[in-house]
Length: 394
Image 1 (cartoon, rainbow, N blue to C red):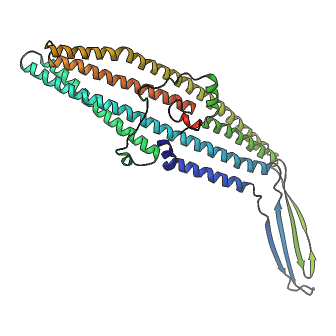
Image 2: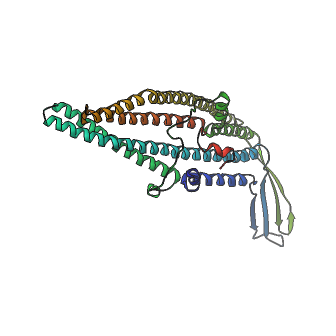
Image 3: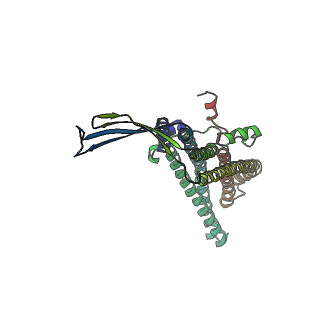
C-alpha cells in the first residue's frame, strides 16, 4: 500500500515521469525535417527604358534532410527518451529504498522504545534500592554513582529510540510525498520483521541478471551510444550539406525561374579535429562504463559480505547472549521470591536482560541495513511482498 501511495504522491517520481513525456515529445519533433527559407526581393529602376521599372523575385532554400545528420538527430532524441526512462526507474528505486529504510528504522525504534522504557523503570527502582542501601551504610557512594550512570544511559537509550522513530517516520513521509503529520496515528505492518530471510544466497546468474538490469549501468551504456552517435555526426560533417533553391523572378515584364544548388562545405581540415575530439569522448564513455560496472560488482560483493556477517552475528547473539541473559533474569526472580536477593541486585539482573534485548535490536538493525544495501546493489527486492508483483499476485 505504501509502495502504491508512493507512485501517486511522490513529487520526484511525478517530475521524472513528466520528463519522460517531455523526452517522448521531443523525439517525435526530431523526426520532423527543418523548414525551408524563403527570401522576397524587389527592385525599382527609376530611369529604366523598359515599360515597367519594377523587378519582383522570390527565392528559397530547402535543406535535404537525409544521411548522417538526420540519423544522428533522431537517434540522439530516441536515446534521450531511453535515458529519461532509466532516470524514472532510478527515481522510483531511490524512493523505494528511502521508504523501506524508514520502515526498518521505525520498526526497530518501536521495539527499542519498549525495551528502553522497561529498562528506565528497572533502573529507577534499582537506583532507589541502592540509595536506601547507601543511606543504611550497606553500600558505598561509588556503587550508587555507577547505578546513577546506568540510569542515565537507559534514559539516553530511550531518547535515542524516540529520535530514531521520528527520523524513520520522516523518511517514510518523504518517500510517499506527504508531511510527517499526515502519518500521525498510522499503523504499519511488516510480517516477519524480526526474522529476516537469508538474502546472501544469490546465485551467479541472479547477480548477472540483476547487474544487467541496473538503471545506472544502462544509463552508462546509453551514454556510450550517444558518444558513438556524436562521432558519426562529426564524420557526417566531412561531407557537404546540400540545399536546393527553386525561385521566381519577374523582371520588368520578363518571367524567370531560377534554381540554386547550395553546398555547405566542411572545415578546411575536413573536420578531423572534431572527429578526434568525438573519438576521445567515446573512449571516455567506454572507460566510464567499465568503471561503473566494476563498481557495481564491487558493491554487490561488499554487500554480500556484510549481509552474511551481519546475519551470522545476529544468529550468534540470539543463540548465546539472549538465553544467558534470560536465565540470569529468571534466576534473579526466583531468588527475590525466596528472599535471598535484594532489589538492587535483582534490578541489575533484569537490566542486563533488557540491555541484551537492546543489543539484539542493534544487531537486527545492522542485519536489516546490510540486507537493504544488498538490495540496493542489485537494484531489486530480495524478500517481502514486492516479490509478488512479478508473479501477478495481490
